[in-house]
Amino acid sequence: MILHKVKVYPSKSKLNKKKQLAWKIAEIASDNAKLNKEAIEMVINRIIDNASVAIASLNRKSVISSREMALKHPKKNGATIFGINSKLKFDCEWATWSNGTAVRELDFHDTFLAEDYSHPGDNIPPLIAVAQQKKKSGLDLLRGIITSYEVQVNLVKGICLHKHKIDHVAHLGPSVAAGIGSMLKLNTEIIYQAIQQALHTTISTRQSRKGEISSWKAYAPAHASKLAIEAIDRSMRGEGAPSPIYEGEDSVIARILDGKKAFYKVPLPRKNEEKKAILETYTKEYSAEYQAQALIDIAKKLNKKIKNLKKIKKIDIHTSHHTHNVIGTGANDPQKMNPNASRETLDHSIMYIFAVALEDAEWHHIKSYTKKRSNKKSTIKLWRSIKTHEDKKWTKKYHDPNSKNKSFGAKVIVTLRNGKKIIESINRADAHPYGQRPFERENYINKFFNLTDKILSKKESLRFLKIVKNLKKLKSGELFKLNIEVSKKYLKKNNAKGIF
Image 1 (cartoon, helix red, strand yellow):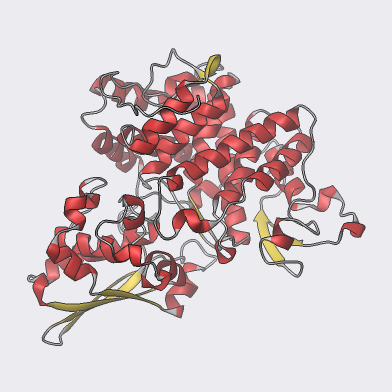
Image 2: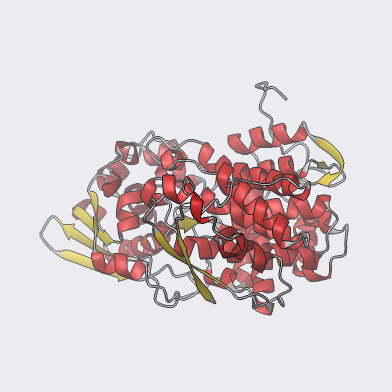
């Protein structure tokens, strides 16, 4: 790996493009690196994971709307849409819009956390859609997805967006562009221009994940991916982009992030070095913000220790800066304590999540978020007794550069009415790669069956799993087989009319 130094340069310096971060990303996207065997297997795991959560969300409102928008853009040799007959094809950018929203809706797929946040599985829908439309092979798709993960993970390691309240999809645009460029075997110049255009057009604020969180949280990655596809298309036609997009005098860094005195260090593999960043990422066992994963595990353990939850006086959660300030009481969001808040808001309230997991000793992607569940009196009382606190020790562990030491856990102190304290602590979720029971292929398949039960026929489930396990052998024009069909009767519709 090479640690690239990134800073702002005045326009008069005329920074050579080969010294720009976008060019260095494009170089590794256009190289001919050998594909790592473990990375290939992990891509297969994540395609299964994405399919699981996408199929489970097909009849949720945002997914219905995105699907109906996409259905208005048929294309003879285009891409497939989750749930729809695979013989029907649509413009790849609109297939991305629908499939990307379905994958993101339940907040239940993979994650990577470092200087910033990310869900690198968001790269997969646009890569599959473009691969289908361009009739690429399974190996082409694998190369593209592995590159996308490499770029997004390393941008997340080096450049913090959330400090400036910029949404994390600003790292997704460049990673999708790089991955598509790699998959299509485009030259460095085309990928370089596309990366810059993709970044320029995917900057948005974190209000999408603040206050009263709406369905836009599910749409945001699909929107960024759609823009990245357009950026690649423009660049392939010989068009340029704002440059240098990272280092320029009026660039993203200079005007939106750390400013003209900024100094970042972004790691990237050397040209032709194997890309393995996907192996540093981790999926979710529970449908909640990733920092909630370990705390759900703690709550389940405490449920067995505390026989009468009515005896709890208060609960203090000592954790990292991110957990406290984004999904904890440090966010100062009254909506996070509101029983009638949206599912998206409750998903970002560790106080709610912990209270429900403590009472139920489990977490369910639908049942745990219903209005009936959030309005249960005992839950509300428990919920409002919870307070989070930033502990610098946990923040330091959160930012540990060594993935084996990196921690997203917490220490929970439960104070009973008689003054007795019960303490439970965990460094990382049980399902984390370095947790007590790391997710393996079998776990991904079980998650798939659990989430798609009563939606898919057994025949369709087994067909899909057989195909995806054999991904690297799929030939040009066969990637439509990765689509999953459901009964027409199952799919709901939104009767509201739009423009399309």
